[in-house]
Length: 477
Image (cartoon, rainbow, N blue to C red; front, side, top):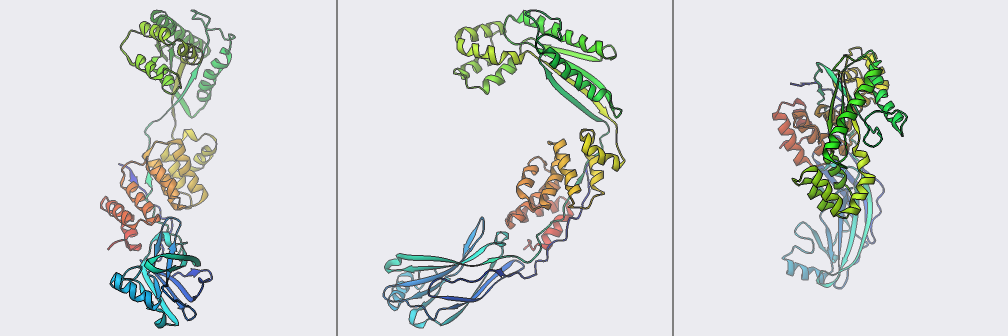
């Protein structure tokens, strides 16, 4: 069972702290605006202003509506409208809409002759996170007979900025388990060329020197390291489907053995240390190539490869039925199928000295385990560059590990980088701490309903930080 190690990143915000609008009111034609006020108080946002309507004229069949609109980057909301109607239009709309007028029962509606010179306007609405940074616009819409829109003018009044500090949740980091044995492996592929039907290795033949040096360099990279013990070396040889299956079986087996003997002569490995295997014809590799290709008869060739014909018959059918595609495969695919895959398994010693681990982070990070990296994080200032670097390095070294992805998601949330956090959380599994982190994602995105559901689920699973988030953010009913 993983041990949860919780690190407090920053205190939660104080929601009761009021926040105000930033900006200068610039009202639409015919109206003045002053005493503009946007204030957040906990779960609610107040929009208030004084409207100077003394200079507005509305005649004939006209009606004028003033509607404050709050625009965010992802959402917007229209507040209740103030409608000024000529005498004729007022009675027409009142009769046709049963006094709901143009925008419905919330509208503040006046006959032009009875319009106050100054109107105190105030609306209180539920606060959503997208409103931080939103622009308040006052829209003027002129209507004629039958609610025909004649003109529209949108005037930005102010931008709302919440004065509270950015929300930083309590992060639930998970301490990785200690690896009893730090087993690692290096893999590679070498393309050794042989003369036709020959099986002896000739280092100076074509590109063989370069390919052989690749294998030796990989072995040397771990063989001379005092922190590493090599535990196994394996080689698997492949041949292409060209030619008879019997011949390819012999060539794959003997060429693999020849490579084993070449490596054995250069190193003092014990007898039997190098393990070998071979595959006479790499039909799986051929299938992968065809699947990704644009060959004219791609579908038919895939069906042929997947069929139950004997290998020699299958290769003959491919060659005789689709000669153009076969020539392409012969030139561009088959050479890559004739290869030797190698793997070096080794064990790395454990590290406990934090300074030594720090040094390895910048030189040989592949030697480290998640738990060893976590030892460094425990000595860092939460949110510092080194703190973030540790968890970002961990997820690069162990990209599919749930704990590494969860902890990297937490560092992303510390920066309010929800998109990156969600990407990591896709690989974080179903740990309760992952559910909690998803709740924080929803919270930062302004989806309080989704956030509440996830935080309550995490709380029920034992994540103590969820209770604090629910309390402080007033997400609970």
